[in-house]
Length: 178
Image (tube, rainbow, N blue to C red; front, side, top):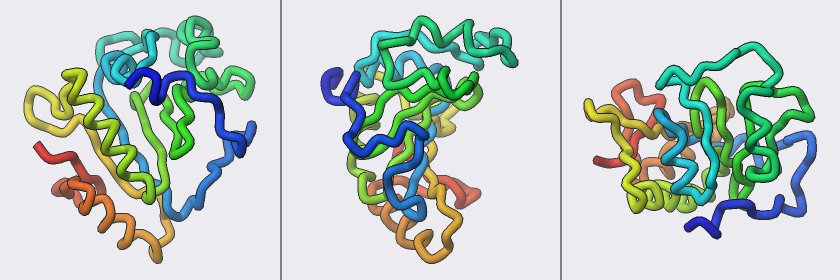
C-alpha cells in the first residue's frame, strides 16, 4: 500500500491555488476521526502528526512552525506558502485529495465517481489494524456529500449507500458497516 498513495507526483492538472480539479457539485468528504498517526502510516507516510484528542494542541494560533517543518518534503504540501496554519495536503492521488486538519484530523475529498478508491482506503486501514469505530462503537469514519447542489445530492447519497455505507441517525452522514 505504501507505494500506492505516498509521495505520488501531483497530477498534471494540479492547480497551485488549490482549486478542486473536479466538478464541485459531485464532491464527497470522508472524515477519519481520532489519532491521525495510525491512519497516515497505513497510507504509507512515515510522519508524525499532532493529535489534538490526546492533548497535542500546541500553540493553535501561530504560524504552523510547531508541527509543519518536520513534514517538509514528506507530504504533498505543507500549505505554509499560502499561510495556512491548520491544514496540510498529505497526498494528492489522481482521484482526490487527502488532507490533515489540525482540528478535525484526516479528511479525504473525492468526486463521487471515485468512491471505490475511498472504500479501498478503508480496506487499507483495516489491513493495518486501524479500527473504523471507537471503543464505544461510534463510527470513527464519516462520509458525506459536500455539495449544496440539490440536483446532484440524491445521486451522491445513493452511491454512498451502494458502496456499503449506512446512514447515521441524523441522515446527514454515513458510516462504514460494522
